[in-house]
Image 1 (spheres, one colour):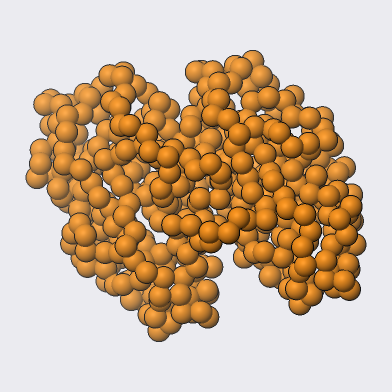
Image 2: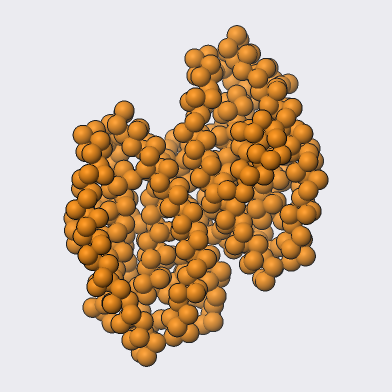
Length: 431
């Protein structure tokens, strides 16, 4: 699923898998980071001024001076370290120099030649990437870039989007368990990776456009086995005519989804009562609710241009290029079933934030497909990842499975043997 086999000039690397967190430092994480907030603001102001000089150098020479490039690169690296610490993606207190070696680090290649034309229109060309970085909540590197180094803009920007919401949930888990949930950590790392690429592009560190592919973070994140999986067999071609009228073409599906929702609600109530009594959902109800989750995913994929073809109306497995594979029903724990609605709240928060990302993907993908006749692969993969988490959340909420959604954004990663969680496992054990 990688967009390009060649190494990216700006790469985020997770150097260790230690998820342990000190409860005390987690509890006071924001206050401990105040000195870094001050320093990242001051350094950001200087980097913003130096970036203007880099812009002039690119226009005149076609290449950034190495010493100025290193100064701005150090800022992007340091801002990413601070974001990783504040967002709980990393535990050790970061240094103030932005030196390489932090557990969540950024590798930035030396300056290379850049196109003068793309350099001249850099801010305009970067607008789509900045929109997506905003939805992802990509940290202080992009925040101070947008705000010209002002503390207010950095704080507001870094506090928005998926990364900040994931960090908010990880804060509660860290205080209770003394460890960060792996799925949320991987999601935050991806947001920081895209933020670092976007900041580097805006600040003239590279002329290569940021990639939104979820495989940005190296090494690849783990992707444990889950009973609800996404399968992408679609190609990237898009008919400009159907893209132009995509929302109008989807109106019959919106009507059918609304009509389907009524029996689905009754089916969920029946499945809930039976599962509490018998410890499993009847096969007929499971098939009906699974088809509803699958159909909803097909429609979302079509509307957001993640999928190519017009979907069917039955939610049949294997009938669409962006498909959801749902395993047959198994026994579900009665206690988790009884409190399913409340247990699903954290996942619903993450799903809502990823829904915002999916909306941005749909808007940007619509324009790209209309102009180029195809969907950018990285954006398609990001959209598919958002759809997977959405489908897993709906499947959990609608009692199709009692396995909690997994937040890591990768479509393929380091495989992890599937293990049954303990009988009293809480949601964050699989987050």
